[in-house]
Image (tube, one colour):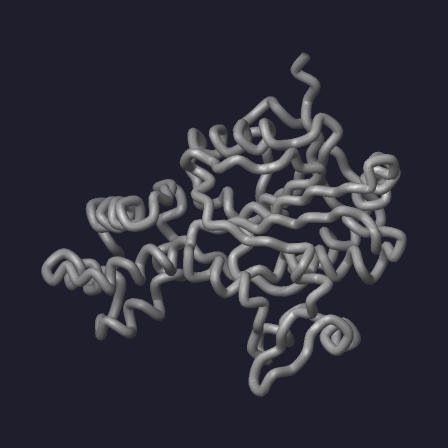
Length: 275
Protein backbone atom coordinates (compact mmCIF):
# COMPACT_ATOMS: atom_id res chain seq x y z
CA UNK A 1 0.00 0.00 0.00
CA UNK A 2 1.31 3.45 -0.90
CA UNK A 3 2.01 6.10 1.70
CA UNK A 4 -0.69 8.65 2.45
CA UNK A 5 -0.26 12.37 1.84
CA UNK A 6 0.14 12.83 5.60
CA UNK A 7 2.95 10.26 5.65
CA UNK A 8 4.81 12.11 2.90
CA UNK A 9 4.26 15.39 4.72
CA UNK A 10 5.70 13.83 7.88
CA UNK A 11 8.80 12.68 5.97
CA UNK A 12 9.27 16.11 4.38
CA UNK A 13 9.02 17.82 7.78
CA UNK A 14 11.49 15.31 9.24
CA UNK A 15 14.05 16.00 6.50
CA UNK A 16 13.55 19.75 6.93
CA UNK A 17 14.04 19.55 10.71
CA UNK A 18 17.16 17.40 10.43
CA UNK A 19 18.90 19.04 7.49
CA UNK A 20 17.07 22.24 6.44
CA UNK A 21 16.55 20.61 3.05
CA UNK A 22 13.10 21.08 1.49
CA UNK A 23 11.63 18.22 -0.56
CA UNK A 24 9.03 19.43 -3.04
CA UNK A 25 5.76 17.42 -2.89
CA UNK A 26 6.14 16.74 -6.61
CA UNK A 27 9.25 14.73 -5.68
CA UNK A 28 7.54 12.34 -3.23
CA UNK A 29 8.61 9.42 -5.40
CA UNK A 30 12.20 10.04 -4.32
CA UNK A 31 11.35 8.75 -0.83
CA UNK A 32 10.68 5.25 -2.18
CA UNK A 33 13.93 5.07 -4.15
CA UNK A 34 16.22 6.84 -1.66
CA UNK A 35 14.92 5.27 1.56
CA UNK A 36 14.81 1.61 0.51
CA UNK A 37 18.08 0.70 2.31
CA UNK A 38 16.98 2.58 5.45
CA UNK A 39 13.57 0.88 5.40
CA UNK A 40 15.24 -2.53 5.29
CA UNK A 41 17.69 -1.70 8.06
CA UNK A 42 14.76 -0.66 10.26
CA UNK A 43 13.13 -4.05 9.74
CA UNK A 44 10.14 -2.61 7.87
CA UNK A 45 8.63 -4.30 4.84
CA UNK A 46 7.66 -1.08 3.04
CA UNK A 47 7.77 2.70 3.35
CA UNK A 48 4.33 2.95 4.96
CA UNK A 49 5.35 0.59 7.76
CA UNK A 50 8.62 2.47 8.16
CA UNK A 51 6.77 5.77 8.66
CA UNK A 52 4.68 4.11 11.38
CA UNK A 53 7.89 3.05 13.13
CA UNK A 54 9.24 6.60 12.88
CA UNK A 55 6.05 8.11 14.29
CA UNK A 56 5.87 5.71 17.25
CA UNK A 57 9.50 5.19 18.20
CA UNK A 58 11.00 8.55 17.13
CA UNK A 59 14.50 7.10 17.08
CA UNK A 60 17.07 9.89 16.44
CA UNK A 61 19.38 7.58 14.48
CA UNK A 62 16.58 6.67 12.08
CA UNK A 63 15.58 10.31 11.71
CA UNK A 64 19.16 11.24 10.83
CA UNK A 65 19.37 8.32 8.40
CA UNK A 66 16.28 9.61 6.58
CA UNK A 67 17.74 13.12 6.25
CA UNK A 68 21.12 11.81 5.08
CA UNK A 69 19.55 9.51 2.49
CA UNK A 70 17.46 12.34 1.07
CA UNK A 71 20.25 14.93 0.92
CA UNK A 72 23.29 12.96 -0.29
CA UNK A 73 23.34 12.69 -4.08
CA UNK A 74 24.83 9.81 -6.00
CA UNK A 75 28.13 10.86 -7.51
CA UNK A 76 31.05 9.52 -9.53
CA UNK A 77 34.19 10.75 -11.24
CA UNK A 78 33.51 12.57 -14.51
CA UNK A 79 29.78 12.06 -14.09
CA UNK A 80 28.07 12.74 -17.42
CA UNK A 81 30.92 12.60 -19.92
CA UNK A 82 29.18 14.91 -22.38
CA UNK A 83 29.20 17.74 -19.83
CA UNK A 84 32.89 17.28 -19.12
CA UNK A 85 33.68 17.21 -22.82
CA UNK A 86 31.85 20.50 -23.21
CA UNK A 87 33.92 21.94 -20.35
CA UNK A 88 37.11 20.77 -22.05
CA UNK A 89 36.18 21.92 -25.53
CA UNK A 90 34.24 25.13 -24.88
CA UNK A 91 34.15 26.61 -21.39
CA UNK A 92 37.70 26.12 -20.13
CA UNK A 93 39.34 27.45 -23.32
CA UNK A 94 37.06 30.51 -23.15
CA UNK A 95 37.89 31.11 -19.49
CA UNK A 96 41.61 30.70 -20.13
CA UNK A 97 41.46 33.36 -22.83
CA UNK A 98 39.41 35.60 -20.55
CA UNK A 99 41.73 35.25 -17.55
CA UNK A 100 45.13 35.10 -19.28
CA UNK A 101 46.18 38.42 -17.70
CA UNK A 102 45.13 37.58 -14.15
CA UNK A 103 46.20 33.93 -14.51
CA UNK A 104 43.55 33.07 -11.95
CA UNK A 105 40.45 30.83 -11.98
CA UNK A 106 37.78 30.30 -9.35
CA UNK A 107 35.37 27.36 -9.68
CA UNK A 108 32.48 26.33 -7.43
CA UNK A 109 31.24 22.73 -7.26
CA UNK A 110 28.07 23.70 -5.42
CA UNK A 111 26.77 20.21 -4.62
CA UNK A 112 30.05 18.35 -4.44
CA UNK A 113 28.98 15.40 -2.26
CA UNK A 114 32.09 13.30 -1.53
CA UNK A 115 34.30 15.36 -3.81
CA UNK A 116 34.50 13.43 -7.07
CA UNK A 117 33.19 16.33 -9.17
CA UNK A 118 35.71 18.82 -7.77
CA UNK A 119 38.61 16.40 -8.14
CA UNK A 120 37.48 15.52 -11.68
CA UNK A 121 37.69 19.21 -12.58
CA UNK A 122 41.18 19.41 -11.11
CA UNK A 123 42.37 16.35 -13.01
CA UNK A 124 40.88 17.68 -16.24
CA UNK A 125 42.71 20.98 -15.88
CA UNK A 126 46.01 19.23 -15.14
CA UNK A 127 45.58 16.72 -17.95
CA UNK A 128 44.37 18.98 -20.75
CA UNK A 129 45.71 22.46 -19.99
CA UNK A 130 49.39 22.25 -18.94
CA UNK A 131 49.77 26.00 -19.45
CA UNK A 132 47.78 26.42 -16.22
CA UNK A 133 50.52 24.82 -14.12
CA UNK A 134 51.56 28.18 -12.63
CA UNK A 135 48.07 29.73 -12.46
CA UNK A 136 46.24 30.49 -9.22
CA UNK A 137 43.37 27.99 -9.39
CA UNK A 138 40.90 27.21 -6.64
CA UNK A 139 38.02 24.74 -6.85
CA UNK A 140 35.63 25.06 -3.90
CA UNK A 141 33.31 22.14 -3.22
CA UNK A 142 30.31 22.59 -0.93
CA UNK A 143 27.70 20.21 0.45
CA UNK A 144 25.04 20.18 3.15
CA UNK A 145 26.36 17.04 4.87
CA UNK A 146 29.31 17.41 7.23
CA UNK A 147 30.10 13.71 6.81
CA UNK A 148 30.50 13.84 3.03
CA UNK A 149 32.51 17.07 3.27
CA UNK A 150 34.96 15.30 5.56
CA UNK A 151 35.16 12.42 3.07
CA UNK A 152 35.91 14.89 0.27
CA UNK A 153 38.65 16.53 2.33
CA UNK A 154 40.31 13.16 2.91
CA UNK A 155 40.50 12.57 -0.83
CA UNK A 156 40.52 8.81 -0.40
CA UNK A 157 38.23 6.45 -2.30
CA UNK A 158 37.51 2.73 -2.33
CA UNK A 159 38.03 0.59 -5.40
CA UNK A 160 34.32 0.60 -6.28
CA UNK A 161 34.32 4.41 -6.20
CA UNK A 162 37.39 4.87 -8.40
CA UNK A 163 36.06 2.28 -10.84
CA UNK A 164 33.03 4.47 -11.48
CA UNK A 165 33.93 6.92 -14.22
CA UNK A 166 37.67 7.22 -13.69
CA UNK A 167 39.79 5.98 -16.63
CA UNK A 168 42.61 3.63 -15.64
CA UNK A 169 45.32 5.92 -17.02
CA UNK A 170 44.06 8.81 -14.88
CA UNK A 171 43.70 6.55 -11.83
CA UNK A 172 47.37 5.56 -11.88
CA UNK A 173 48.52 9.07 -12.79
CA UNK A 174 46.59 11.10 -10.21
CA UNK A 175 45.91 8.68 -7.34
CA UNK A 176 48.13 6.51 -5.14
CA UNK A 177 47.01 3.22 -3.69
CA UNK A 178 47.01 2.77 0.09
CA UNK A 179 45.76 -0.70 0.92
CA UNK A 180 42.09 -0.84 -0.06
CA UNK A 181 41.88 2.88 -0.84
CA UNK A 182 43.19 5.25 -3.48
CA UNK A 183 44.32 8.76 -2.48
CA UNK A 184 44.20 11.83 -4.74
CA UNK A 185 47.64 13.26 -5.39
CA UNK A 186 48.92 16.43 -3.74
CA UNK A 187 48.74 18.62 -6.84
CA UNK A 188 45.02 18.05 -7.43
CA UNK A 189 44.17 18.19 -3.73
CA UNK A 190 45.95 21.54 -3.43
CA UNK A 191 43.53 22.96 -6.01
CA UNK A 192 40.43 21.86 -4.07
CA UNK A 193 38.91 22.87 -0.76
CA UNK A 194 35.61 21.78 0.76
CA UNK A 195 33.04 23.52 2.98
CA UNK A 196 29.73 22.59 4.60
CA UNK A 197 27.10 24.89 3.07
CA UNK A 198 23.30 24.88 2.99
CA UNK A 199 22.36 26.30 -0.42
CA UNK A 200 18.90 27.22 0.85
CA UNK A 201 20.27 29.20 3.79
CA UNK A 202 22.64 32.13 4.27
CA UNK A 203 25.76 31.45 2.25
CA UNK A 204 29.22 32.17 3.69
CA UNK A 205 31.69 34.62 2.21
CA UNK A 206 33.13 33.16 -0.97
CA UNK A 207 35.13 34.46 -3.93
CA UNK A 208 33.69 35.59 -7.25
CA UNK A 209 33.44 32.50 -9.44
CA UNK A 210 34.24 32.10 -13.12
CA UNK A 211 32.42 28.77 -13.28
CA UNK A 212 29.68 27.27 -11.10
CA UNK A 213 28.54 23.65 -11.33
CA UNK A 214 25.11 23.24 -9.72
CA UNK A 215 24.31 19.78 -10.99
CA UNK A 216 21.67 17.27 -9.90
CA UNK A 217 20.56 19.09 -6.76
CA UNK A 218 17.80 21.46 -7.90
CA UNK A 219 15.51 18.48 -8.46
CA UNK A 220 15.05 18.39 -4.69
CA UNK A 221 14.00 22.02 -4.30
CA UNK A 222 10.58 23.66 -4.66
CA UNK A 223 10.40 26.64 -6.99
CA UNK A 224 10.85 29.32 -4.32
CA UNK A 225 14.07 27.68 -3.13
CA UNK A 226 15.37 27.31 -6.67
CA UNK A 227 14.74 31.03 -7.15
CA UNK A 228 16.70 31.79 -3.96
CA UNK A 229 19.59 29.56 -4.99
CA UNK A 230 19.85 31.09 -8.48
CA UNK A 231 19.85 34.58 -7.00
CA UNK A 232 22.63 33.72 -4.54
CA UNK A 233 24.66 31.92 -7.19
CA UNK A 234 24.37 34.90 -9.54
CA UNK A 235 25.62 37.24 -6.80
CA UNK A 236 28.80 35.18 -6.55
CA UNK A 237 29.50 34.87 -10.27
CA UNK A 238 31.64 37.02 -12.51
CA UNK A 239 29.53 38.88 -15.10
CA UNK A 240 31.17 36.83 -17.85
CA UNK A 241 31.01 33.55 -15.90
CA UNK A 242 29.42 30.19 -16.72
CA UNK A 243 26.79 28.10 -14.91
CA UNK A 244 26.24 24.38 -15.51
CA UNK A 245 23.18 22.45 -14.32
CA UNK A 246 22.32 18.76 -14.47
CA UNK A 247 20.89 17.36 -17.69
CA UNK A 248 17.38 17.16 -16.23
CA UNK A 249 17.46 20.67 -14.78
CA UNK A 250 16.85 24.10 -16.21
CA UNK A 251 17.03 27.68 -14.97
CA UNK A 252 14.35 29.28 -17.14
CA UNK A 253 11.41 28.24 -14.94
CA UNK A 254 12.88 29.78 -11.78
CA UNK A 255 14.86 32.87 -12.71
CA UNK A 256 15.51 35.51 -15.34
CA UNK A 257 19.07 36.07 -14.16
CA UNK A 258 20.59 33.72 -16.75
CA UNK A 259 20.22 33.00 -20.43
CA UNK A 260 20.84 29.60 -21.97
CA UNK A 261 23.50 28.72 -24.56
CA UNK A 262 24.37 25.47 -26.33
CA UNK A 263 27.71 24.00 -27.38
CA UNK A 264 29.34 20.58 -27.78
CA UNK A 265 26.05 18.80 -27.17
CA UNK A 266 25.27 20.53 -23.86
CA UNK A 267 23.34 23.47 -22.51
CA UNK A 268 24.93 25.94 -20.12
CA UNK A 269 24.01 29.36 -18.73
CA UNK A 270 25.49 32.86 -18.76
CA UNK A 271 24.52 35.72 -16.43
CA UNK A 272 22.13 38.30 -17.83
CA UNK A 273 23.52 41.84 -17.71
CA UNK A 274 21.24 43.51 -15.15
CA UNK A 275 22.96 46.92 -15.28
